Amino acid sequence: MLDVIAFDADDTLWHHEPLYARAQQQFVDLLKDYEEAGQVKAALYDTEMRNLEMYGYGIKSFTLSMIETAVALSGGQIQGGEVLEIIEVAKRMLRAPVEPLDGVDRVIPTLASSCRLMLITKGDLRDQQAKLACPGLASYFWSVEIVREKTTEVYHCLLAKHGIAADRFLMVGNSLRSDVLPVVALGGEGCAHTLRHHVGTRKRAGAGDKGLCGTGLHTHASHACREPMRAIRSLTGEAGRKSPAGNVGGARRANTRRVQRRRCLQMRCTLGFNRPQLRPGAPQPRYR
Image 1 (tube, rainbow, N blue to C red):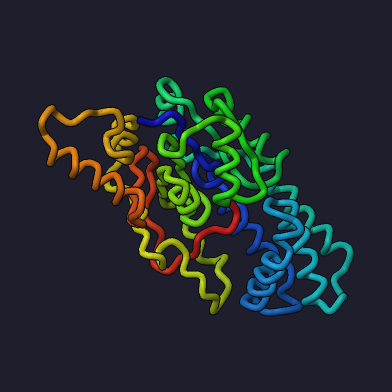
Image 2: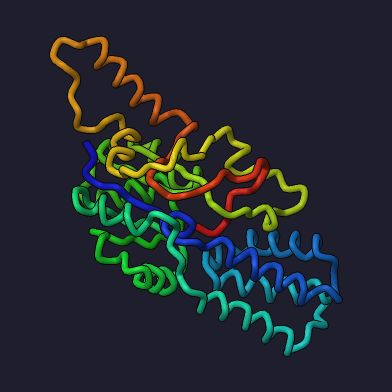
């Protein structure tokens, strides 16, 4: 039986990746006199990855990487007015309204009425706190944790901090690497879902990142679930429901299914969010 259900934030509770896709296109347009679009995107990606350890995640770190890329691609000829345009792109991202994914307004209150909910997300502390307040979701979460990275060690510390048993914990998010595998490694439950956007425009040309679709993870919803609580129970092996007395074989099969559900990468999320599949080959978003 579950004690706590934790959710990722960006692109799990609200739309986020489209902000970066639009900003990247504006950045490409700004640098069209210096370099072709493909090279601009590849250089920006490289700069972001190189700066990740120092700057972390978020719009501010993305902005610094855009400015650094612009200086490098222009050979130091980028004008002050053009740098101001990059900064204005970032300000528009920060001012953009928060748009919850379809179904979040129903699922979160329903789950909060019978289970403790946590929010575990990466990113800038100020930005994430502001986004959480806008959709009016903050009151439903028992705990909010904004972390630098989501690793097995980080999840272990969070579970220990709050006194949560790993096998009574479910993490829901859009990232196999950040939201599923670290939790499964601790003996918990991980559930991945798809985004509703196409994010292929942010993929570095020729990069080996196959994203979610390239890992063998099938993350499509099997149907649009109108009963979120039943969906949660199905994801966790009908938690709390006992097998009939004497039905040893049934109990064994149920236990086997639970183990396979933990270990299998073919996870489905039927929490009621209305999402189509990622197009084949689309990369996993970098900002979550």
